[in-house]
Length: 68
Image (tube, rainbow, N blue to C red):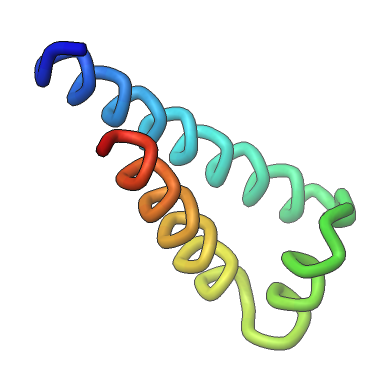
């Protein structure tokens, strides 16, 4: 696999993760309950910013590992 293709896929994963974060934040602000028990606990105990940081970190690490 070429480096450009790999970079394209990693960028796509990060963009889709960002879209997912935004959609989740919009849904939560509308009163929807987070179904993932770990993320629900994170939001309740530490706030939405912790949710975003953890989500971005986990997906970034996983995407980087897949890109190798």
